[in-house]
Length: 138
Image 1 (cartoon, helix red, strand yellow):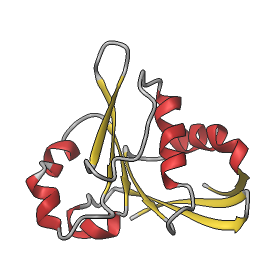
Image 2 (cartoon, one colour):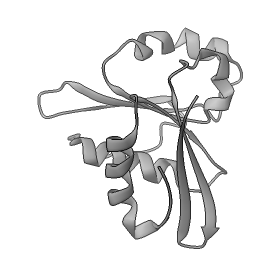
Image 3 (cartoon, one colour):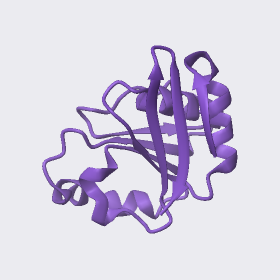
């Protein structure tokens, strides 16, 4: 999947990502402010989570569940991570073994911990309200 989109099309893009991703571990790459968290918010909404997504910058991870309190997704923001050991200490490997979706911002901070089948999602600025998105499997 590769396309340009307007920011007001983010829900449609999220739906396409969920349908086209060959796995449930999505690694989001892009500059600060490109819309990684905005995409995650739309992904969580499309999955039907009861909570609205927000950035887990200070807590490193947020969990989103369905109406029966079953985990649907985990959203990681590793921007402030100092080393991979911090991710291991928080139980990152346990999250990888869950059946939930994993949305990972700043995955380059934990590159050696990522599964081989992780889906790389690249977001880029085109214009003020236009972005490009591309999905790749490692």
